[in-house]
Length: 264
Ligand SMILES: [Zn+2]
Image 1 (spheres, rainbow, N blue to C red):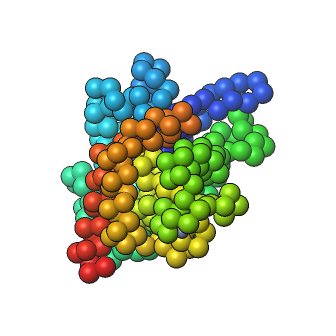
Image 2: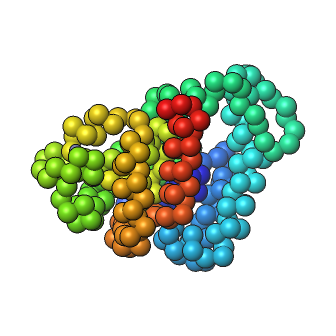
């Protein structure tokens, strides 16, 4: 997830006169961006391709080390003040233990927290790169991708696969009333893995909202990708979406077992 976020940000940002990787740290560039930039240069610009190479495990280990060593300890610092509200600041080791209720709240308020963090992230990058960025208006899109671009890329492939019908109720989809749905809702697990997308009409999409679909739909999802997993992966690789069926299966399995454990 961390690498997916930063992968696109390790591309040089192009202006009329220059193209450079945006600084995301005072002084030296952020370590994760350097790691990803090196991997791009040596292997491929395509994340799905890099994920298939032996380098991938090394990359994940390197990034995990940086995350556990650096930002986690800084997560509760606001200016010079160290707050103590998400977890207790032990200052040793490379793991943290969230306080009771924190995981629930992070999930519940995911949309709100994401918006706040993205806004702050964009402002921070803009300040650090003021001379390169000037009045650039597409910074948000550059850093986080365009939701619309992803959805547009996903639609035709899924339309074929679903023979033009809603994944949930099987009525024929009208173009103006077709929505791309995260099968495991983004608020439960923020994954844009290709296999997590289905097409639905707006009525079903609204009804499902940020809940998990009923068990019968889980069976349909599972069948569909047992049969067409590779086909959809290939169709979505071009627009740059990462699809890894094993990972999607783990995410879906995890989400449903969480719901079951909670009596959902
Ligand atoms: Zn429907």
